[in-house]
Image (tube, rainbow, N blue to C red; front, side):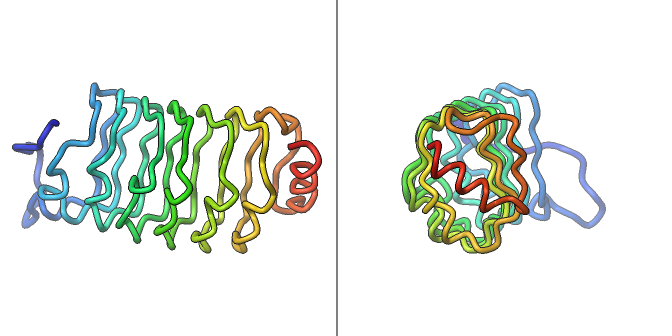
Length: 195
Protein backbone atom coordinates (compact mmCIF):
# COMPACT_ATOMS: atom_id res chain seq x y z
CA UNK A 1 0.00 0.00 0.00
CA UNK A 2 1.28 3.44 -0.91
CA UNK A 3 1.33 5.82 2.05
CA UNK A 4 1.68 9.57 1.83
CA UNK A 5 4.87 10.50 3.66
CA UNK A 6 5.30 14.07 2.45
CA UNK A 7 3.57 16.68 0.33
CA UNK A 8 5.22 19.55 -1.51
CA UNK A 9 3.74 22.53 -3.30
CA UNK A 10 3.05 26.21 -3.25
CA UNK A 11 1.45 27.75 -0.21
CA UNK A 12 -0.76 30.75 0.24
CA UNK A 13 0.17 33.24 2.92
CA UNK A 14 -1.12 32.22 6.36
CA UNK A 15 -2.33 28.84 5.04
CA UNK A 16 -1.04 25.35 5.73
CA UNK A 17 -1.48 21.98 4.07
CA UNK A 18 -4.36 21.38 6.50
CA UNK A 19 -6.28 24.22 4.80
CA UNK A 20 -6.28 22.54 1.38
CA UNK A 21 -9.85 21.94 0.18
CA UNK A 22 -9.21 20.59 -3.34
CA UNK A 23 -6.74 18.00 -4.62
CA UNK A 24 -6.60 17.36 -8.38
CA UNK A 25 -4.60 14.78 -10.32
CA UNK A 26 -4.87 14.33 -14.09
CA UNK A 27 -3.12 11.84 -16.38
CA UNK A 28 -0.76 10.41 -13.80
CA UNK A 29 0.12 6.83 -12.94
CA UNK A 30 -1.84 6.67 -9.69
CA UNK A 31 -3.20 3.18 -9.00
CA UNK A 32 -4.61 3.79 -5.50
CA UNK A 33 -5.63 6.68 -3.29
CA UNK A 34 -2.67 6.84 -0.89
CA UNK A 35 -3.07 5.70 2.70
CA UNK A 36 -2.92 8.68 5.02
CA UNK A 37 -4.33 11.22 2.58
CA UNK A 38 -6.85 12.26 5.25
CA UNK A 39 -4.02 13.18 7.67
CA UNK A 40 -2.48 15.62 5.21
CA UNK A 41 -5.78 16.97 3.89
CA UNK A 42 -8.33 16.81 6.73
CA UNK A 43 -10.44 19.59 5.16
CA UNK A 44 -10.55 18.20 1.64
CA UNK A 45 -13.90 18.90 -0.06
CA UNK A 46 -12.94 18.14 -3.68
CA UNK A 47 -10.95 15.13 -4.90
CA UNK A 48 -10.24 14.60 -8.58
CA UNK A 49 -8.11 11.71 -9.82
CA UNK A 50 -8.96 11.51 -13.49
CA UNK A 51 -7.47 9.45 -16.32
CA UNK A 52 -4.79 8.10 -14.00
CA UNK A 53 -4.86 4.26 -13.96
CA UNK A 54 -6.67 4.25 -10.56
CA UNK A 55 -8.09 0.83 -9.68
CA UNK A 56 -8.61 1.22 -5.92
CA UNK A 57 -9.97 4.08 -3.84
CA UNK A 58 -10.32 2.54 -0.37
CA UNK A 59 -8.93 5.59 1.43
CA UNK A 60 -11.55 7.99 0.04
CA UNK A 61 -14.04 7.12 2.77
CA UNK A 62 -11.66 8.66 5.34
CA UNK A 63 -12.16 12.14 3.80
CA UNK A 64 -15.17 13.05 5.95
CA UNK A 65 -15.63 16.59 4.53
CA UNK A 66 -15.62 15.46 0.89
CA UNK A 67 -18.45 16.93 -1.22
CA UNK A 68 -17.21 16.34 -4.78
CA UNK A 69 -15.53 13.16 -6.02
CA UNK A 70 -14.31 12.71 -9.59
CA UNK A 71 -12.63 9.40 -10.39
CA UNK A 72 -13.45 9.34 -14.11
CA UNK A 73 -11.52 7.43 -16.77
CA UNK A 74 -9.65 5.04 -14.53
CA UNK A 75 -9.70 1.26 -14.06
CA UNK A 76 -12.20 0.84 -11.21
CA UNK A 77 -14.17 -2.41 -11.61
CA UNK A 78 -16.63 -2.46 -8.69
CA UNK A 79 -18.36 -0.31 -6.09
CA UNK A 80 -18.77 -1.99 -2.72
CA UNK A 81 -21.05 -1.39 0.26
CA UNK A 82 -18.24 0.39 2.12
CA UNK A 83 -16.84 2.39 -0.83
CA UNK A 84 -18.44 5.64 0.33
CA UNK A 85 -19.21 4.73 3.93
CA UNK A 86 -18.97 7.73 6.26
CA UNK A 87 -19.09 10.34 3.49
CA UNK A 88 -22.39 11.93 4.56
CA UNK A 89 -21.44 15.29 3.00
CA UNK A 90 -20.77 13.83 -0.46
CA UNK A 91 -23.00 15.53 -3.07
CA UNK A 92 -21.50 14.64 -6.46
CA UNK A 93 -19.85 11.46 -7.73
CA UNK A 94 -18.35 11.24 -11.21
CA UNK A 95 -17.10 7.75 -12.12
CA UNK A 96 -17.70 7.61 -15.87
CA UNK A 97 -15.28 5.83 -18.16
CA UNK A 98 -14.17 3.13 -15.73
CA UNK A 99 -14.70 -0.64 -15.97
CA UNK A 100 -17.41 -0.92 -13.33
CA UNK A 101 -19.35 -4.16 -13.67
CA UNK A 102 -20.75 -4.45 -10.17
CA UNK A 103 -22.44 -2.13 -7.67
CA UNK A 104 -23.41 -3.70 -4.34
CA UNK A 105 -26.89 -2.87 -3.02
CA UNK A 106 -25.80 -0.72 -0.04
CA UNK A 107 -23.10 1.24 -1.91
CA UNK A 108 -24.90 4.60 -1.69
CA UNK A 109 -27.03 3.89 1.40
CA UNK A 110 -25.44 6.45 3.73
CA UNK A 111 -25.20 9.26 1.16
CA UNK A 112 -28.25 11.30 2.18
CA UNK A 113 -26.89 14.45 0.45
CA UNK A 114 -26.01 12.81 -2.87
CA UNK A 115 -27.40 14.99 -5.69
CA UNK A 116 -25.55 13.75 -8.77
CA UNK A 117 -24.26 10.32 -9.76
CA UNK A 118 -22.52 9.85 -13.10
CA UNK A 119 -21.62 6.30 -14.13
CA UNK A 120 -21.67 6.67 -17.92
CA UNK A 121 -19.46 4.49 -20.10
CA UNK A 122 -18.94 1.57 -17.75
CA UNK A 123 -19.78 -2.14 -18.07
CA UNK A 124 -22.88 -2.44 -15.90
CA UNK A 125 -25.39 -5.16 -16.83
CA UNK A 126 -27.88 -4.57 -14.03
CA UNK A 127 -28.81 -2.19 -11.23
CA UNK A 128 -30.47 -3.39 -8.04
CA UNK A 129 -33.95 -1.89 -7.60
CA UNK A 130 -33.12 -0.79 -4.02
CA UNK A 131 -29.86 0.96 -4.90
CA UNK A 132 -31.18 4.52 -4.39
CA UNK A 133 -33.78 4.00 -1.65
CA UNK A 134 -31.70 6.10 0.80
CA UNK A 135 -30.86 8.99 -1.53
CA UNK A 136 -33.73 11.49 -1.26
CA UNK A 137 -31.70 14.41 -2.67
CA UNK A 138 -30.61 12.62 -5.86
CA UNK A 139 -31.53 14.89 -8.78
CA UNK A 140 -29.27 13.64 -11.57
CA UNK A 141 -28.60 10.03 -12.62
CA UNK A 142 -26.32 9.30 -15.56
CA UNK A 143 -25.93 5.69 -16.69
CA UNK A 144 -25.55 6.09 -20.46
CA UNK A 145 -23.49 3.69 -22.55
CA UNK A 146 -23.42 0.76 -20.17
CA UNK A 147 -24.68 -2.73 -20.98
CA UNK A 148 -27.94 -2.55 -19.08
CA UNK A 149 -30.53 -4.92 -20.47
CA UNK A 150 -32.99 -4.76 -17.56
CA UNK A 151 -34.00 -1.69 -15.57
CA UNK A 152 -36.76 -1.97 -12.99
CA UNK A 153 -38.76 1.28 -12.80
CA UNK A 154 -39.07 0.78 -9.03
CA UNK A 155 -35.49 2.04 -8.73
CA UNK A 156 -36.77 5.59 -9.44
CA UNK A 157 -39.70 5.68 -6.95
CA UNK A 158 -37.73 7.07 -3.96
CA UNK A 159 -36.19 9.82 -6.13
CA UNK A 160 -38.66 12.68 -5.67
CA UNK A 161 -36.13 15.37 -6.68
CA UNK A 162 -35.02 13.69 -9.90
CA UNK A 163 -34.64 16.20 -12.76
CA UNK A 164 -32.05 14.52 -15.00
CA UNK A 165 -32.07 10.91 -16.06
CA UNK A 166 -29.80 9.53 -18.78
CA UNK A 167 -29.82 5.84 -19.63
CA UNK A 168 -29.25 6.21 -23.38
CA UNK A 169 -26.93 3.81 -25.15
CA UNK A 170 -27.99 0.78 -23.14
CA UNK A 171 -29.37 -2.42 -24.66
CA UNK A 172 -33.00 -1.71 -23.80
CA UNK A 173 -33.06 2.06 -24.46
CA UNK A 174 -33.29 3.66 -27.90
CA UNK A 175 -30.22 5.92 -28.30
CA UNK A 176 -32.24 8.61 -30.04
CA UNK A 177 -34.82 8.93 -27.26
CA UNK A 178 -34.64 12.41 -25.66
CA UNK A 179 -34.35 11.98 -21.91
CA UNK A 180 -35.55 15.08 -20.13
CA UNK A 181 -37.61 15.43 -17.00
CA UNK A 182 -40.57 16.79 -18.96
CA UNK A 183 -41.03 13.35 -20.46
CA UNK A 184 -39.96 11.30 -17.46
CA UNK A 185 -43.24 9.40 -17.32
CA UNK A 186 -42.84 8.46 -21.01
CA UNK A 187 -39.30 7.33 -20.30
CA UNK A 188 -40.41 5.19 -17.35
CA UNK A 189 -43.07 3.63 -19.59
CA UNK A 190 -40.38 2.93 -22.19
CA UNK A 191 -38.19 1.25 -19.58
CA UNK A 192 -41.12 -0.75 -18.23
CA UNK A 193 -42.01 -1.91 -21.76
CA UNK A 194 -38.54 -2.61 -23.19
CA UNK A 195 -36.38 -3.53 -20.23
